[in-house]
Length: 361
Image 1 (tube, rainbow, N blue to C red):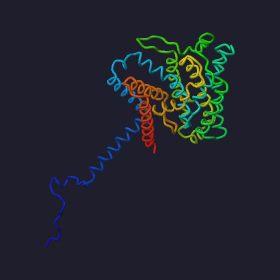
Image 2 (image 1 turned 90 degrees about the horizontal axis):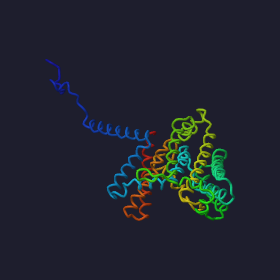
Image 3 (image 1 turned 90 degrees about the vertical axis):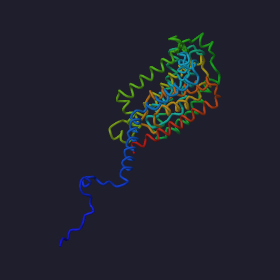
Image 4 (image 1 turned 30 degrees about the vertical axis):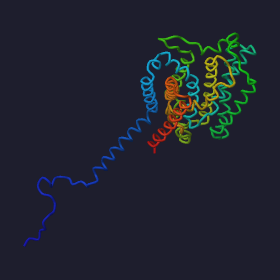
């Protein structure tokens, strides 16, 4: 009598088929989907200018359709570049600081103080204009040096330090200038070199100022320094992890101090461009440059936590804001809603940055 029990296993060709759990297919699909999202996150994380580039192109297409010929005219595009010229230059300084996981709220005050030094020395005191410009840039560098010393030597948070120096530099600006504007007529008569960056060249219907060209040149130089030199790699390393950078032999305090000094020098150059942009030296000009520069940096994809970002992204961020304001203005939208749109852009940019940061966790 056979003791073999009938087997419930499938026979024939079915015996070679793999029996999968019922829930394995959805799990595999979910894993593949998450893997695809992760790859997309990593791609955007390694190319921080991708998102602002896409947004800029999309906004150009959108306003081209909404507004039409006026928006597409070369003169209008050159006008947008002129409008973001100061923010683009100051944004370079802000990007350097933010890359080190800091922030500089005093860049606008440094710029205006430097412009008043240039204006008063050249116009009211008769100092040769090149020396007056050099003195203004030197004052800006000294302001940056003061910020750097407070951050590196006294270990104070950059936000608090620059919030304090913002008020100090602004007060010095009002004291030194006596709250008086140096008129365009006086500058043109005695120191025309001060308004050099406001002069323009005509090109295919566009009017490019020398300040706009200088902004693009400074972006190119800053990109090269940050991506092709040892100092630029040190800046990224300090922002990514300052302790690891110190253990790797990088003199982190020196790097940070130099970042703030260079940022000050760039603000001094922005001061010269500001005089050319508005045609005068005013103690009330450019007071929102600090917040506008942070806006350009954030929208441009530079992480507020340091270590990741791009100078080109900052330029794109400034252009995005300029395109939105210009396009909405040509569409007849109230200034109130223009600022509303910029605020939405900032929040979206920060949200994207937080999402991309999860790739490193």
